Length: 221
Length: 347
Ligand SMILES: Cc1cc2nc3c(=O)[nH]c(=O)nc-3n(C[C@H](O)[C@H](O)[C@H](O)COP(=O)(O)OP(=O)(O)OC[C@H]3O[C@@H](n4cnc5c(N)ncnc54)[C@H](O)[C@@H]3O)c2cc1C
Ligand code: SF4
Image (cartoon, helix red, strand yellow):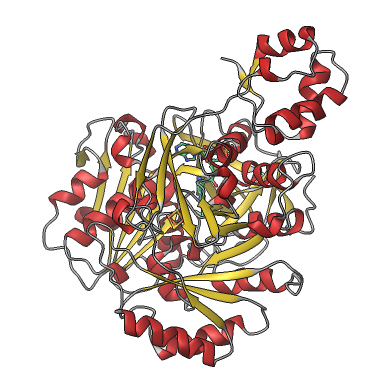
């Protein structure tokens, strides 16, 4: 049994639970602690299990913290989270982590739920001078796409590997990046998602002349 | 598919035998055969009754795995390739050195942590190793009897596979297991703090931390984990334990030219490690394909060591071993042996 006080876990009530695409869910809970966009929280449903980490997907000044997650078929926590209803309880930690954005020009590159920290940065006022590249399997899985489309237009790229769609690159995010020439070397490149995506994307960027010290990655290990 | 007995703890074996209506003392007999007498099959367990042998054989096998190939370096280092249960491969490096011999074992197939300087990181992650698969690298090593120490510094991040790593250390050190002193074992981590804290609490083995930069902003550029568990949090956790006993903590520091090799880095290392009884191991960087990083020359590495020693931090330079067979630190990878499964990608 996990000692909630040792892990600084706190019980919160699930709200606004929604399945945005097959196996991709979002829910929120009332914000108790302040946080910096890009940070994560540790979550568990059952105190006998080790908590898992999730990026906060809402802005710093919003009254609720949103969490975006996708279900792993054999995943311990995500299969439990998928079965929650509004009003159920989960245990969450204080926000922590140092994957922080800033106001400099940057690319935000994410796959799947890896878009969460960038959604948080956007709603926290760091969206200026950014270019977003988001990879996903289905057209519905691009969380916050209506808002990003409006705000960024041509600077918002969706890469869909499983379905074709209007204004959507049909293929993997890494294939899209390979088509991009003259990527600015003075921009920062923030990457977030699975380790496969981060490692492959980082290699492509470096091969295209981006200095490695301009690339910052958050891996969902 | 039969379940393996090898790799189970005494408690797990007790569950096996009581589940088959055998007396619980049979579990102790099993650990003797498995971990002390090196038998290959259940039939070899001569003090078990015929009935118990046939009961066990219905559901279980010993489960040892032989290496499928070995490469030998000019310096005597050997790199062994072992198949895994999920039809992938892992590597282990046997490093003889005068009157010592160390085995560097893998804890995962590939790795999720994506460190910029590491071949295993480039391979991605293909699965965790069971405790049996970890111990098997030691047990099935032709040079088993020569081994003086084991380091968990092969493929994978041990604390991303904590339960199996803890179990493997338990089997190595328990009286009913190999009865090794925990001082013969070092587990190396990039600093997954919650798992590391549990390891420190429940095990007595040595701990090595891959630091590679004392500055948070720089470490982020080569080790994504820094975004989650930054250096101050890592060191605060370490400082909350008493390292004055027999147990050792060391910091691994791969040297990168013009990145982490200046006096500024020495000063900062001295500052952040102040109060921790530890040592630093400097490692030469072994370039991996397309890497933007490079190694300083030998003279600079020696000077860096001397200046750290002058600051009162015991610092040594780790000899590079097995470079010609890609067995050296950061070079292990079985990527070439993998069948690419593109459909598993989420991007
Ligand atoms: C910093 C950070 C932030 C994160 N943020 C989010 C987020 O915002 N949203 C989100 O959905 N997830 C996020 N994750 C991932 C999350 O923490 C959980 O790991 C994930 O949700 C699975 O939890 P689970 O309990 O369902 O699966 P588990 O029961 O933990 O099972 C997952 C199993 O699959 C294995 N596995 C993982 N990747 C692979 C792979 N590529 N190939 C084969 N096996 C694999 C794991 O090692 C593990 O054994 C984040 C992770 C980190 C480290
Ligand atoms: S250095 Fe260790 S943790 Fe980092 S990628 Fe390589 S094996 Fe994984």
